[in-house]
Image (cartoon, rainbow, N blue to C red; front, side):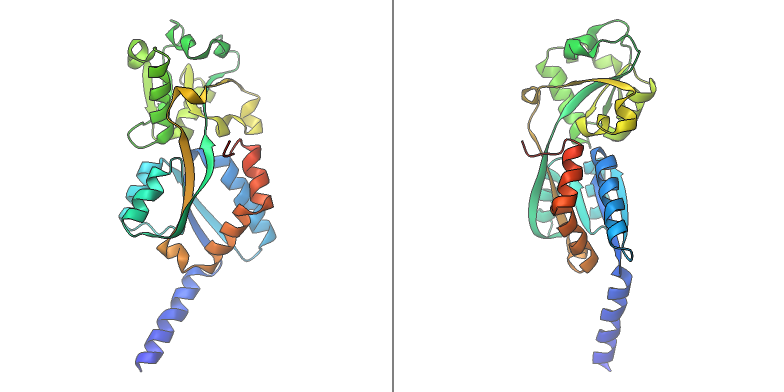
Length: 249
């Protein structure tokens, strides 16, 4: 009887996972990971990838409260390290990129991003969008870059915070903010690239952001999660990641 119950539970567990991968990912991966997921599903007809994008800190909180994710792609390695310290992961934490910050403005705004962060001092720049630095690594890096450039104290009152880096980018892209300090990957999406001007902030202006991913304990029991990760780590995934500027250099 006990053996039948155990067998039943194992079968039920396998059915729950069958063909479905649930991913928590930093918002700077919005376009890159979505493209990888689409390509993966096209190559694996019975598989379904569900991705939740958000600020890395908020995603860690959700997982700590029981959110059922198989894989976690963070904008800073410190976040998967927190999960590992709490015994919530399996396998190694693997870096996948070094995060780069860009200053962007809506094309035709009259704000010359070629001036770098000093342009934020201009009177015609009234709102500067960044991700919430309390939960988003790109928001934290944006603040560090402004401080390194010596402009932060003069423009702190202009800053508006998005819930994550993708929302902050949207503020800048739509003109809701006059400028935005966000992830480089988000301005490499073709339909966005044509509508914005951008300046790549020197990497020395902020602490190096090593972005990394890890498999959760739930993912360790999910064959589909392992299969997706192999695809991500392979040639197909690597090509798409590089397209959006995700490299370890």
